[in-house]
Image (cartoon, rainbow, N blue to C red; front, side):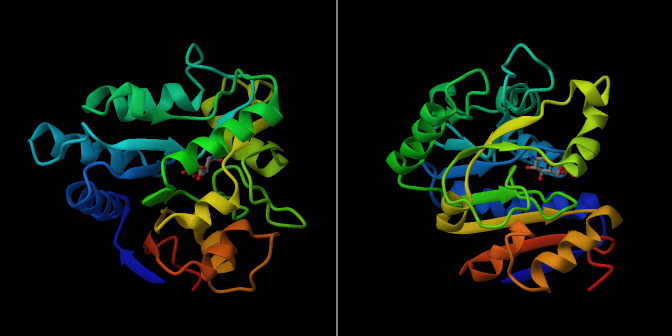
Length: 241
Ligand code: GLP
């Protein structure tokens, strides 16, 4: 595991965008595993800037996103598909047919989760998976549990996650209670994992994930077993280690 300690969010975004750029340049038809939340917004902005300058080309690149709220689709500005369009996809030349996100509108959870795992397999797995981290150590929407769940699954969000994510919704009651998330299996099979964390809010999660025991109670702690993890975190996020 390599940990890059950076000064602040801006430096974090540049470093993460550099790492993703290196992947896209060295393998233009790579599979990018992408994430939502406030952490990757700066990274996406930087990638867009470099694309506009002509330094990056996403025409052959494929993407798979980590998760989606169950019940939400593109018509909702809180859905992750909407977030990804606004914050990245509509600004770059990725081919829409190469974009993949769990379908929150699909009511049959078993069918949707199987479709998503089959799809990731058919792409040959993920080359680089970008991850944020939840305050309780969740990755994607893999919440603390008694075991690690390998497959894409439908998860009941914890109160801590609902509380943390309510800032994006009109009220806490509007936050969906369930989500589809890629499982730990596909994340662990990614050739490279790039986890980004910024701010004091994440310090506890970083400490527990990378400097504590490996336990499903802290889902990101499994990354200690991944052969190629890069953590880019700012001084605040690393303040407890
Ligand atoms: C959500 C997402 C995660 C993300 C987390 C942290 O729960 N499902 O993928 O890592 O939020 O978000 P933020 O980066 O806004 O702190």
